[in-house]
Image (cartoon, rainbow, N blue to C red; front, side, top):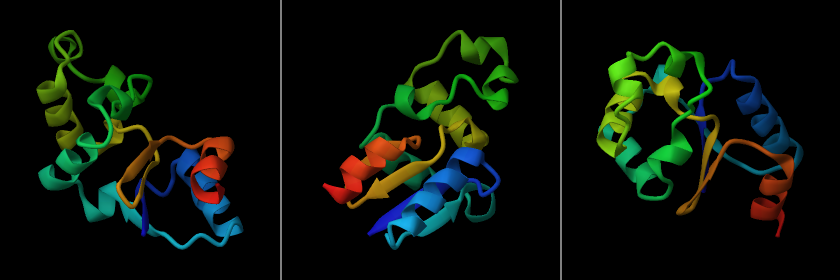
Length: 115
């Protein structure tokens, strides 16, 4: 089973969802804003990807973080920040069985889903 995590108005999430639909790949969509982000879900994602892979340092949400958080990042502070503000997570995060793909690139999705 495939689950795509993100927010529906994100352009990259839209591209990923469109690609999956064009390839007739069934998936569930988990909207971080509507469906939430639990500690259990984030912990599960962090078991498959590093906090450095998940944390989007180019986002507006990251730029708005307090300097003491940005300057003292580690797994615990990054996880706490992502739980407080899920838009800090790079989008989309795609869970395919036990594999995680962070972000969207058509070539990566093709390699993952069509190989």
